[in-house]
Amino acid sequence: MRYAYPCVLTPEEDGDGFSVSFPDVPEALTCGDDRAEALAMAEDALAAALSACVHCGEDIPAPSSAAGGQELVAVPSLVAAKLALYSAIRAQGITKVALAARLGVSEGAIRKLLNPDHRSHISQVEKALRAIGHGLVLEDRAA
Image 1 (tube, helix red, strand yellow):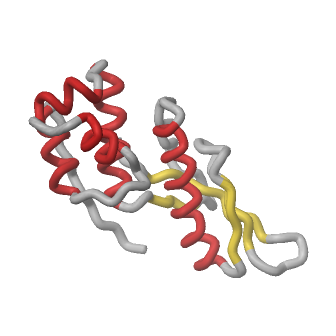
Image 2 (spheres, rainbow, N blue to C red):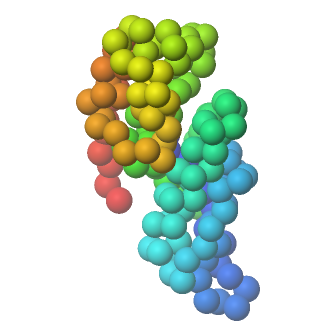
């Protein structure tokens, strides 16, 4: 899955800044003094809301296509990789203990690997994805 979600930038009533909301992730709300700051804050808000899904054991919502006037906001690549791993093990019914056994690491290491808020090496996430028959593809796009 591609972890890039459409957002709506709404000018504030007083004309000072923008508020940001995500139709697919209603918990992700933020604002900024200008368009650029609002979009930068949107990335953080989106990552935090999707991380909350992981911490609560919920499914990650699928992003819809951007409609007219919407901007696409992606989470940082490491967060996207961790969300992909989390979603894949949920879909396959693999436990943290089972994944740890496949990788020859502790369950605690897997908990850290699945935690979007914990710093990990992306190569470790890629190794875990390969262990469950998945891979990771990064793409770039114009800002």
